[in-house]
Image 1 (cartoon, one colour):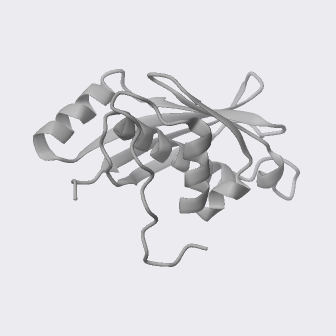
Image 2: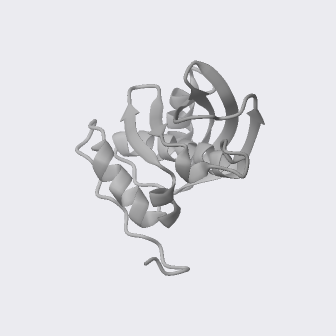
Length: 167
C-alpha cells in the first residue's frame, strides 16, 4: 500500500528511442496510483500521435446504469498524464507531470464498454514541448481526450499538462 507523502519509485526508462511495454507500464501505474486497478483498463496502445485505452464500463457505472461522469473525468485526466509521461519516457526524460487545467463536455451517455483516445490539440504540440524543455527545462502541452462508445462520441475533454523542471 502506498504511503501518503512518499513518492512512488519511477519505472526505469526504456532504451533510447523505444517505447514502454504497455502491460509493464500499466502494472507500474497501478502500483503508483492505486485507483488505476479500479478503472477497468483492458488494453493500452500507442503510436507516434495517439494513446488509446480500451475500458470496461462496469467499474464506472452510475446509479442510472451508464458511465459516471466523475469516473470518466478522472480517466480523461489520467490518460493525458500518461500521454505526456510516455512521450517524455520515449525521449529518455524522467520528469514529473501534472495537470494544470482540464475541462470536459459530456455529449452522450456511455452505455457500454468504450475506448478513450488522447492526442495533441495542435499538430505542432510535441515539437513545441521539446523546444520548451530544451530552452527552459520545463514546458506545457495541450491534449484532447475523446471517449467513444462504438461510433458515438460521448465525451470530449481537454487538458494542459505541465512538465516540471528536472531534478
